[in-house]
Image (cartoon, rainbow, N blue to C red; front, side, top):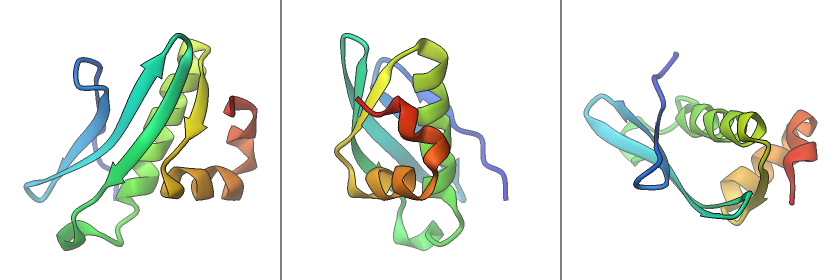
Length: 91
């Protein structure tokens, strides 16, 4: 399943709508460091890899901007541990 993830800079979030449910990764930006604070995927649409898609989109933005990331969210922290190709982005 492929979902469309949008970067809402004003809300400091990466968002997707899946079957009418809002899924998001929230972050705070300080200088060139993005702290990912929360991943939200409603239970009704869970188990489809949506959190992983949101995380990949957020980390792609971090890489494209030349930023670093602090994974304060446990899901994103675990994701980066499982995907070593993102380790260089850690602040």
